[in-house]
Image (cartoon, rainbow, N blue to C red; front, side, top):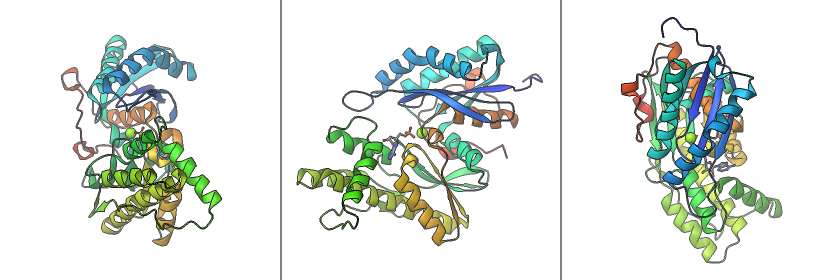
Length: 340
Ligand code: AMP
Ligand code: MG
């Protein structure tokens, strides 16, 4: 880095539906991101359309991010971006912007692992040391722990991510993306109207497969309950109870196996209040503690990318142009942890 001091690190997130620019200062302190998420009127997220969305709003968001801290582009002394995993066309937009900015302002470039960024912003925000992470997002569902210098995946979904499952269920009911928050509201309404609800007639398959999870069977069964005339609010409640219990069970087993005493939530589905409560209850029962970052740092955000970029640059890692290509299939355990 030629002895250059890192003042502000800009982070660019573009793995899927969201383009986001965020900043950390010279001490790695995060500031809220400028973010835009594509919300298709109908159907799911099309990678090309999401990439077009990212192209269209990039300069406005970058401008907003800089303005939020009264910065000039020349105040940025490092550029971090999501190198993977994610949707190819979306990742390429973020990487192109990152390369362009790093070259124009002659500052270091650092490509980071999106999943690891979720963990690191959570650790920073919650002040936890060595947690088991329950990472529940649109495309990913993983239970992760730091062992021997890497974040190891101890369990994960064998088919679709929990968020995608919720979004698909919602879409079939005419609820647009993102469906998760609406399912949460409908489930809460069911509890409000039925303070002592019963699962009778609302049973769903259980998603646990050893230390792994699988959600497509649950999705099919939940869709069938609605087709068979069960109230939508009741099915939303049952769906949440079943899939969140499954995630919490695998997370609990990960705590037991590793002997760790902290659980950290991350990913968009970690915005869900019911999931947060279930994690807290489980942790209380085993003298552990459950942490959840503020919601703006659970969803995909540029700030977490900036934070991990800052950590990696501080530990001496840098991305050269010839190693800056995106990797759609980058795994959580492919990134050596070289920072504290
Ligand atoms: P991410 O992929 O991490 O950006 O998270 C997006 C996913 O989080 C989408 O599948 C959303 O439906 C889901 N999500 C966001 N808020 C909530 C919520 N309150 N409850 C459940 N899922 C949510
Ligand atoms: Mg994510």
